[in-house]
Picture (cartoon, rainbow, N blue to C red):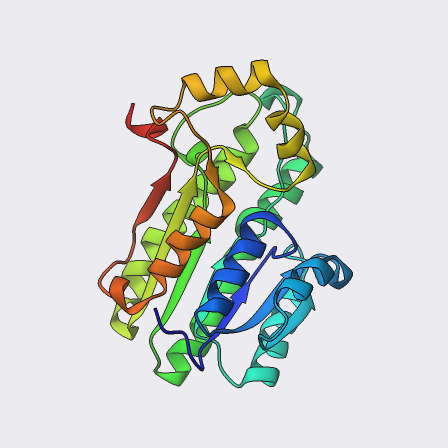
Length: 250
């Protein structure tokens, strides 16, 4: 792929999938706006992006003013936006009967509402500019299969999958492709994933459910994202690529 002179926004880029996506797009020549809830949290990935043109930004997806300010700052710095990677999300491990009103609203705002309105900002810009562009959202296998204590999270990710389909149709006439990548269980550098990865009994039970008997990596998810924003994927839109080792096919 050739991202030379193009600009991408990657949300939730301080670690894990977001950081891997930022690194993959930087290697392809993209200029980047990367976000985290606190700008200081981006310091480790900024060190890895030395040599790339990068704008670090604080972004709270639960606030419309923060979303609008993020898009405006990227446009002021780079003059254009070509790609958006909706990666930022929060998780909640809670039984459905115990899920509270406030924590439900907080999760949906961060995972779905905020992603929609940031996508809206980028879509408005691309349409006004009469330029093709690419939107890629990081969904989850939980959007397709049920799991205990994951209802709010899975519902929010299912919303992202349907947002992908809807916007792909609505924006096709403008040359904007809209796709998603849905990982299954991942092994990343987040503390929670490292903790479960060190639990042998948990990992054995998890891997038994996955036909390929392995977890995907953040770099593999980033590779799928890099493909979807490349010229090779210009005819792909409205699709969700599963990176789940065959979990949802079984």
